[in-house]
Amino acid sequence: MSYVCELCDKHSSRGRQHTHHTGVAGGQWKKRAQTTLRGFKPNLHWVTYSMKGILTRVHACTKCIKRLKFDIAKDTIKAPISA
Image 1 (tube, one colour):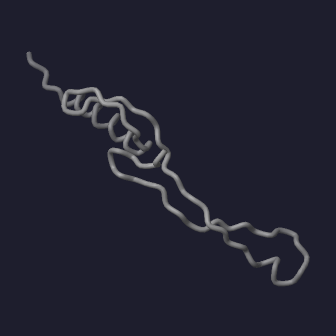
Image 2 (cartoon, helix red, strand yellow; image 1 turned 30 degrees about the vertical axis):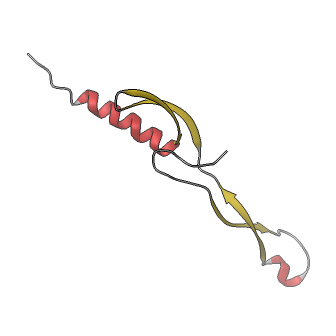
Image 3 (cartoon, helix red, strand yellow; image 1 turned 180 degrees about the horizontal axis):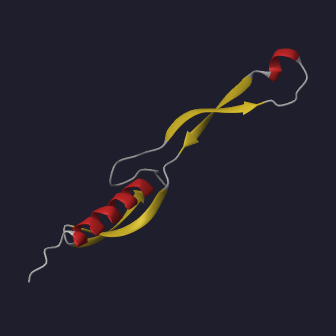
């Protein structure tokens, strides 16, 4: 499974994770933090939404889901009221 948002192309990245030694006797090791590599994955969910009038099921990150909900709500508020 690839961790890629199909709407914004957000993908996995790698970085460093720090583990701190608290209360360990031994001079400098009290203050030094060891680093290890770890992976950061986007928070993806399956979402069904209308793309060009066709219902499509895609992997989307939570930021895109929030943006889609906001855009849908904004469109319904701006609907012209005919009197």
